[in-house]
Length: 203
Image (cartoon, rainbow, N blue to C red; front, side, top):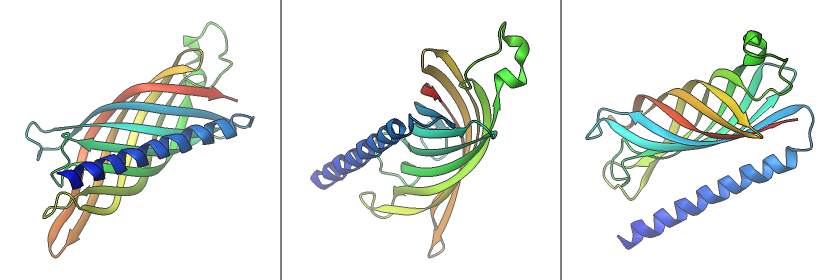
């Protein structure tokens, strides 16, 4: 139990470091005039029938860069999906992913919603996909970790509310598979969604 507690502390420290890197990157790039920046943080369910109630709870922290001249965004994200104990191989301690998103600005798609042309590009729809490293508890030893590649596809919207604060909603599909000695040690084909807040910087 002590060992497990120490490992949990180390993982939380790593996540804090990752968050700090994201925020510092945002600050360093805030003087650029060719991109929009969004920092997102939220949570929601991931549906997996192996869980007792079929649901894993989780969250996401993401940094998104949107070049103003092309309809694309580039996102770095960290996610987790668990029952709170990290004892089972269907729980996800971490999923670090890089994604490419196709972006459609609502001001361009549905200009009739606005009485005046929008001056910022912080309200938009998006869809895309990505890949990254996933870490789950090992079947034989829940204190150890199995790592591999996972992939996800996403569709969602980001809506600016006021100042730089916004709201996002995202549906996702997560896939990952790894076999060791004819045993599926990583096995995901799950749907989920996220709701949360965003900080938006249109530069």
